Amino acid sequence: MEKLKQTKVRDLLRSKETGNDCLVRGWVRTKRGNKNINFIALNDGSIIHNIQVVVEVADFDEELLKQITTGACIEVTGTLVESPASGQPVEIKAKEIKIFGTADPETYPLQKKGHSMEFLREIAHLRPRTNTFGAVLRIRHAMAFAIHKYFNDNGFYYLHAPIITGSDAEGAGALFRVSILDPKNPPLKPDGSVDFSEDFFGKETKLTVSGQLQAELGALALSLVYTFGPTFRAENSNTPRHLAEFWMIEPEMAFYDIHDNMDLAEDFLKYLIRYALENCMDDLEFLNKMYDNELIDRLRFIVENEFVRLGYTEAIEILKASGQKWEFPVDWGTDLQAEHERYLVEKHFQKPVILTDYPKEIKAFYMKMNDDNKTVRAMDVLFPKIGEIIGGSQREESLERLTNRIHELNIPEKDVWWYLDTRKFGTAPHSGFGLGFERLILFVTGMSNIRDVIPFPRTPKNAEF
Ligand code: 4AD
Ligand code: MG
View 1 (cartoon, rainbow, N blue to C red):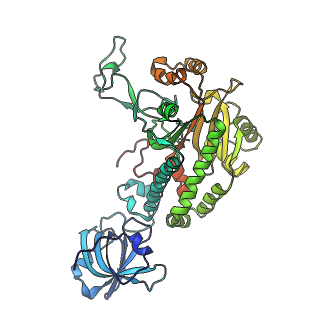
View 2 (cartoon, rainbow, N blue to C red):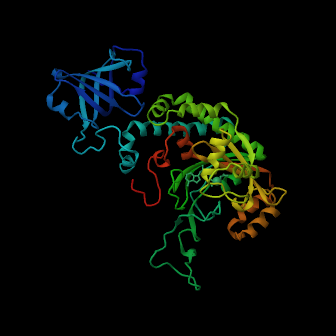
């Protein structure tokens, strides 16, 4: 028999043509049956569903069948036939089976279904083989693809921001250092401090917290750009919404004011969620059934409703008048915590909210100052169950005001001279924002912990896989 080409399980399950021979490869999810007939549920990751392989025991070597256990990797050649069982359109009548790799039932950790998410995090090297992580990883892929498609279709250029930088864009101070100096015996300056001029880059360097400053350089030449890359924050935030290494999408647009920026953010988020509803339904239905019965309704609700737009000052009034007991008290000037953000979104408005015009003290140096000299043209998009999903702003385009601000904050001009140059030469009004990719995936999948929406999470004390 001529060797057949492999067909993906997804294509077989969607195929209407039965009667032909086919070849599939994948991992055994379960094997059940009796002494005459065996049923193997086979999955190759192309779709949440398994294909059923029907095995006439008499036609196969007993030793071979014994080795086909949960987790084993096999190749099956057989005939695609209509399935008499409900819930699956087709199945394979096996003619030949080859084993690539066995999985000892005594030691294979994914023997049974229904492991806790905590346990699965300890076996992050194997968890992609579960239904849940298959669904999450396929949705993650679809969202990454949709992000590039959205920007490409709307005239944006993908700008690759560096991962190693010398600047702290957000001023948060939580940076991972990149160095080749000997930690035990670094070169020292006469004043006793480390002499980074002898380091690889001739200066102190860090892993980037944001590609924004470089995106601004791109926008002031190409008008519409976006970055999409890993970013790093060394803050010790052990929460279900923080990672030390996460991916961020940062569009930056010349000639956009804060209103254009909000319009883009809303349109972009709705596009991505609509894309998931139109392209990931199998996986969403699984997650909706297993984890979060309101997931699909919630996604539809976002697409169908306008986001509320509100000033920070009014938000503080609402929170103070709410009569709620807060873990973190609120007053004008305080940064909003997840509990406040979620109250506004889930209880008060019951819709996504875009908050603008925050006090300058709690926002980064590059945001455009309002005429009141107290607030800046910041915008945060707040989502149900997530809190802040996007942070952005209109940027300060005036060289004078920007220089004043960096002096106020003691940012050395020598660190950001190249950024200031864009305001010196052909400055333009411009805006942008950052979408946390994993926060988006959290929302779209309905998972409750950010560690479960990235293949190999990096969090405090955890970088195993
Ligand atoms: O609000 P952030 O810090 O804004 C910036 O970095 C700006 N430079 C963005 C811009 O204007 N271009 O971060 C943006 C988003 C947050 O809204 C959140 O979704 C996500 O990034 N984020 C995190 N996601 C996971 N883990 C963390 N530790 C995160 N910190 C921020
Ligand atoms: Mg923020």
